[in-house]
Amino acid sequence: MHPKNHFQKDYDFKSLCLLNPELSQFVHVAKSGRKSVDFTNGQAVYELNKALLIERSKWKNWSIPQGHLIPPIPGREDYIHHLADLLREENKNTLPKGPKLSLLDIGTGAGLVYPILAECIYGWQSIGSEIAKDSIKHATQLLQAQNNIDKRPISLRPQKKKHFILKGIIMEGERLDVSMCNPPFFSTKKASEEANALKWKKLKQQPQGANFNGSDEELWTIGGEVGFIKNYIAESTEFKHQVMWFTSLVSRKENLNVIKAQLAQAGVVKEKVIEMKHGQKQSRIICWTFLTDHQRKLWAEFRWKKN
Image (cartoon, rainbow, N blue to C red; front, side, top):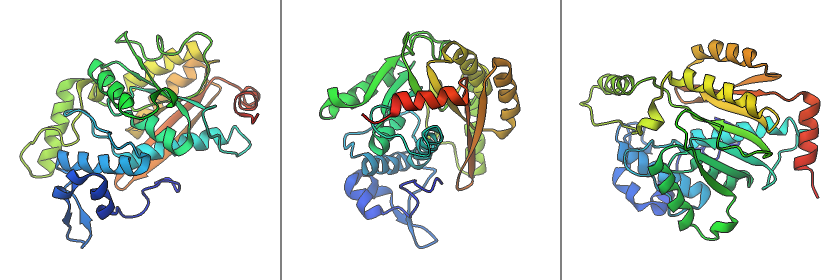
């Protein structure tokens, strides 16, 4: 876990249950003697992460619709901290904070988790793009439920073209400091369902649906993770001077060689892989830019300098 992650210590379930009373029914004392929840129970996982996000962000009315991906909040926070470190390297080792910095979250989902964390931790502006109409609807309702909506540094942009990622989202002449993405993993719906069935088999339990849920748009796309990221890289060449850093999560390490080959073909100036680990789960962030060191230095001086 990133050293700045808010969730380094054991969860304070007493406080979390006060923030989200629905969590109480799922808390039990594990064999270790510590309080926990059953992580194979989708509702328990949802209520826990809802409490964690409320604690971190103070968004008391946060929710996601049933059947959508349940975001593990500590892992989501790690991605934000690693982006901050990436941008700090461009800013004379000074962490850029406040609304001068702009983030694009590709496929932001119904819960707006990355933009919410970027706002509460670093005060960044965020644009959440999303192709699923029901996710856009729910995310809009979340924003409307908050006070001072016009002053919130979060905006939504529907992606109206199914096969586009950046096109139709980044406006002409617009400058964004960093883009991020948690791409769909599977290449077909069938592959997603088979993986879920195998997970339940390993747990030696009868299938109870997807224990972390997920809509079709969140779980699978043609070509899977690699196909999505390759398309993302191809589109990024059209916005090479409008975004300082493009980034994406990569679930499987063996996918990196294919992705790096695509980056070389696209003519990126610099790439970087950031490793992440949460318990037994390992992941990584692939980062790329088309700007030279000098151009990124000028970018930081122009966009992030103090008045």
